[in-house]
Amino acid sequence: MTGKTSTVSVDDKQVEMAVKPGSIGPSVIDISKLYAQTGMFTYDPGFTSTASCESKITYIDGDQGVLLYRGYPIEQLAEHGDFLETCYLLLYGELPTPTQKADFDYRVTRHTMVHEQMTRFFQGFRRDAHPMAVMVGSVGALSAFYHDSTDISDPHQRMVASMRMIAKMPTLAAMAYKYTIGQPFMYPKNDLDYTSNFLRMCFGVPCEEYKVNPILSRALDRIFILHADHEQNASTSTVRLAGSSGANPFACIAAGIACLWGPAHGGANEAALQMLQEIGTPDRIPMYIAKAKDKNDPFRLMGFGHRVYKNYDPRAKIMQKTTHEVLSELGIKDDPLLDVAVELEQIALKDEYFVEKKLYPNIDFYSGITLKAMGFPTSMFTVLFALARTVGWIAQWSEMIEDPSQKIGRPRQLYVGEPQRDYVPIAQR
Image (cartoon, rainbow, N blue to C red; front, side, top):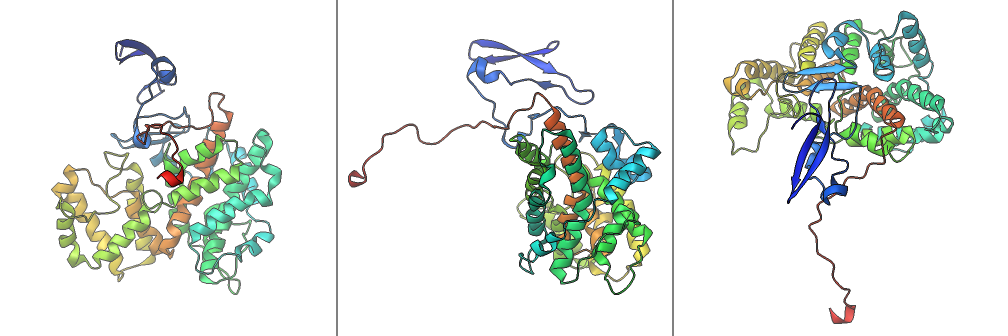
């Protein structure tokens, strides 16, 4: 590679490809004209070496364990800010002034109610429906209730749709939870902050006043910040791909939720908790550690290591502290599952095998423990992930809509099927 171009050799032909630098991180080779100049495509399953877009929103350095939102380290945002401040940052590119923050909080708070007909829409789901199934359906249905903000060519309608989704997602998530447990829906309260309001809608009941625990509210707010965006992951890429066709924003976010539901993506914290349940008691941990080290054993420790972070997940450091704050606040001392988690954490942080392979506890390990301790069933874990990630999806979707270089997504393929052949009449087969 020399200068700002890279030479690609195809057979006896030399093709010059432009090299685009990033503000930080690796540069990319622009192969958009590769097919036109060589008659060949690239082959990259999982898009592990392919940049699908330019973005100014989130930067990850997996080798160094760095995560930046608009240039700000995740550690600083989680320690000093709140979730709505992070939402503003992701949407508008800068941290808000006090006046901007107050105005943003006001607009979000006063969009939290959903159309009253949505309550009847929920009655169409089976009582035992998975909350994520309910979320996919209800978020997709928002376009039927709020069709005055589906014109993506109108900046004002895009803004209104964005605010509506950030505001209404906690209400829909709480409604999905209440529906599955047979309790009445709780209307939002405008005098509560974003996360406290959500906790009340989930755990409050009409017959008595719900008092928000500030330690738990702050912990959940921090979880939302940590999950708000994570660059071009599977669900974000799904939102962008759906949006590239001109689909309305509600449909795009519903597509992202559907993708997030997969156990390899948003369901990872639920899988980590299920693993802890399988282990059962702390005395069984050595046996499972041995199984994890055995290459011939299919068992894998869930909640350890990360596809992107080859070092310690920076979000896990914050979640570790948050988890212990929550456990201390709730005084949980006799929960076998949490005993297993705490013991397994200590072993993994010290065991040479885990340290050498950098299999550190990741955010899914800690968030699953924390959410269970707070009273959320495992079926709600991915719903909370979707709630937090909504702002990231919207920021990425908006950036894509405003990017003049973006086209409708159309991946290529390597065809390995039958070559052309002639049709044979059925009587001759």
